[in-house]
Amino acid sequence: MDDLKNVKEIVKEKYGEIAKSSSSCCGPSSCCGSTNEIVGYTVMNDEYTHLEGYVADSDLSLGCGLPTEFAGIKKGDTVIDLGSGAGNDVFVARAIVGEEGKVIGVDMTKEMIEKAEQNNSKLGYSNVEFRFGDIEDLPLADNLADVVVSNCVLNLVPDKQKAFSEIYRTLKPGAHFCVSDIVVKGELPPELKKSAEMYAGCVAGAIQQEDYLAIIKEAGFINTEIKKTKVIELPDDVLLQYQDKDQLQSYKSSGVGIFSITVVAEKPIDKTKGCCDDSCCKN
Image 1: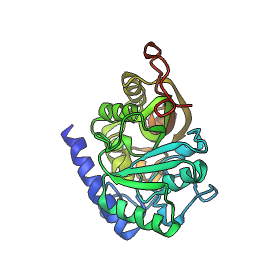
Image 2: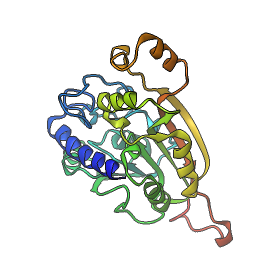
Image 3: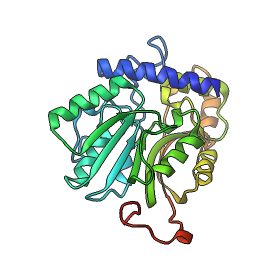
Image 4: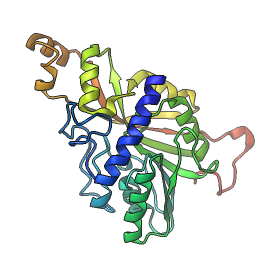
């Protein structure tokens, strides 16, 4: 836990630097590594430029998926984006909810909030806001959102159970989340895990996929479904620093590895209390 808290502080510091310099996570100033570590590749983020609402200034290549792709966001929805950064997913979600909806971004880095607000001021959206806060203690009301999204952030949160409990609290009964995140399948050799964390810092804090899904279930969610899985490929020249060619081939065929998953799950309606009104129940 102490190591994860250290990761969180490092991420906060590095994301602040990224916000100021507008460099990408896996560029010369890696979000979770130093300039002397293995960096220089964007191995996780997906292409956003084709999406309506895309704003180039808000895209810092910090994600590992496209959570809005499977989020089932509708016109008029209230959407929360956790770890909203410079506003990339917020502005994409805003294009879907339209004037009738609302999108709230939450980030723990003040520099990111400032950058996101600067981006929004250029766009003039009155139904978009950014709040400074911690995912483990969200500055948001109960039963607020129709959809919660997050992109490559929750794996870096030390207390993932608390994070998903907060997502549960802020969602309306019957509403859902869609997050893209990093997980591990199988036991990575320690030296490979270390190299992966240096190469792509967002791997730090990633847990086993089965444990990740168990946390979601323990938080009370139902109908959990993985919508997309993507292998996070580390280049051979990185892996060969720690393995010979035979070991590398064995690793690649083992099914063990680092993956980006996009997962959805629903907050159930408590039927024992009857159906609540439209202000707190997902329509």
